[in-house]
Length: 403
Image (cartoon, rainbow, N blue to C red):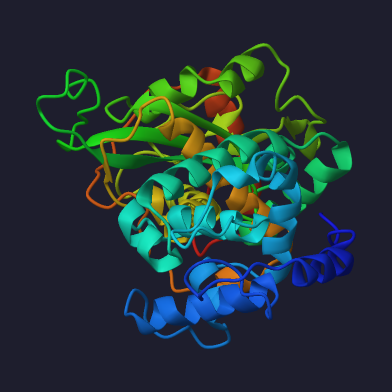
C-alpha cells in the first residue's frame, strides 16, 4: 500500500507563495491553493450541466475527478518530474503557464470524462491541442512511474492473502485470480485502410482488453492491443501469462491438500469463453446439471463476478475507454488502456473509497454475446472434479449425492 506523499505541506506552501494570476478558467489563482481552484472548477463543470449534482457523500472535486485529494496528490508526485520538465511549453489561453496540478487535472479529466478535447479545453481555458499534448505526456509518464501498481503477487504471503479472500467469497480454495475480457470500441471510417482489421463479430470496431483480477478488484495482469474479433481463448493463449503457466513459472506455488489423497494446485477461474486447463477452471457445461455441479457453477459465478465488477468500474471511472473513441491511434490506444488500469489500481492501493459512492452499471461489454470454448484438458477436468467434490462435502446441498 502507498503511504502519504512526503513534503506535501511544504509543496502546498510553495505553490501558494508562487501561485499564478489568472481567471478561474485559466489556472490556479494567486490567492487560492491548487486544490481550492480545482474545487471551484469542479463546481463550475457541474453547474454547466456536464455532470449531475455530486452523489451523496462526495464533494465537487471528488465527483468530477472520481478520487480523493490524497490520491490526486499522490498521482502528482509520481509524474512531477516528467510533467514539469518542460512546463513552460503548456500555457492557458490567457498566457499563464500551467502548474503541475493544472496538467494532472486536465489529463485526469480527459481520461475520466471521455469528453472531447474541445470540451475539456473549454472548461479549463485551454486549446484542444494543449489538452491533447498534456494528456499524452501524462500517459507516457504514468506508463513508467506507475507500473509498480500492476504486478503479479511476488511473495507467498501476498498470494496467501489473495487465496484467503477468494475463499471467503464462496468457498473456492487455492484460487489465485479471475480472468475476463472486454471490448474497447472505437469509431473508424470505412475508408480507413485498417478498418476491416478492427471490425469485430458485433460489427463494431474494437480492441480487446483481457484482465486477471484479484478479490479486491485490482488488476494483476492485463493484455491489450489485439483486434476485438479475436476470441477470448485465443487472446489468453497468446498472452505471456499463458506461456509462463505452460512453462511452470506461474501458478506454481504450494499445492493444497483437500483431503487424504486429494490435493490441488494453484489456479485461476474464467467463464465458458476460456478452455478448461490444469490451471484455468471454467464452469460445468450443460443444462439440468446434478445439484452438486450446479452448486459449483453458482459458487464459480459468484467468485467470477469480481472481474466483472472490476471491468465495469474501470470503464465507469475512465470513460475515455467506455464509449467509442473517434479514430484513435492504434499504437497509442493500448498505452491509454494500460494507464487507465494503473489509475484504477492506484485508487484501490490508496484505499480511496470515492469509487464506492459512484453509481456503476452492471455490464462492461453490453451488446456482446459470448463464444463458448469447448476445449478441455484432462488435468483440468480432474482439478474441477476435485473442487466440485470438495465443495459438495463441505457445503452439502439438499441432494448431496455427487455424480
